[in-house]
Image (cartoon, rainbow, N blue to C red; front, side, top):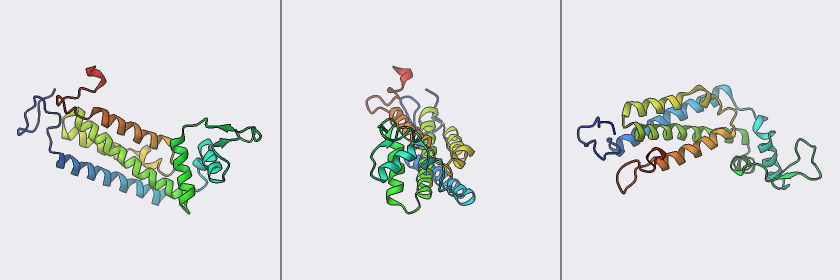
Length: 193
């Protein structure tokens, strides 16, 4: 375990040498920075209402759900009599369906939801870096790099399932690497098994 940079907290058994309030404030700043960049991308680039989300397999299934045809996919029109059923993971499809069902501008709503998810991903990366590196500078640079990564910023204008899945995976990793109350160490990390 690296030496603690905070003289108030001993390094032995310390998982996070920084006060929770300090990390929370930095995390909120990373989130605000990331969200503002993504909103700026939406405002500047715009959102294609006929984008790939609503004519892809996921979009077609979501539109079929919305139109009352169930969780089906006619495989580009080749299986109209016997459409495929339940062949895709439901998480992104249900998000598309919710945008279609509850919004008058589903493409913009989807982009805004993805902006929030992508910003939360930057915060999750910040928190993971804080827990794993024990260094505030490393955590801050990791969070800012994730917040300002051009691909993650611009893909908000063409939301894909990767953003949603990445947010879920990183949240799971964050829960998995959180300190164990039993011994104060990262005992649930695969490397310690």
